[in-house]
Length: 137
Image 1 (cartoon, helix red, strand yellow):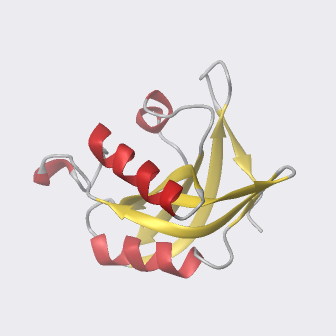
Image 2: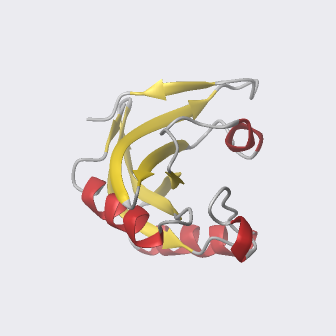
């Protein structure tokens, strides 16, 4: 389970602000038992070419390292990465699966005509074959 209550509106704002492009960013927080408690988001630049940002996102390795350092400074951990799907459902694509790692959570926000409508979160299986949906509290 992932607890996103306190940051859901911030993620929605990032997604709506980036529309019609995909937004992306890191999730900072702690793990308590089996619950990932997200306390902050860390927006990251979508490194895809400008004409591809409406369908894909990419995060450069140095940006991931920057997020990890920023989380550590606050005594937090990077627990996952969010992104938006402009005018598409909040379901992971094959591209998302191919670029994900099993250790992180992957919230996806559907943005329809500029308005964030739904958020789901996903965990990649250890064999990297499929995602399973996480409960968002």
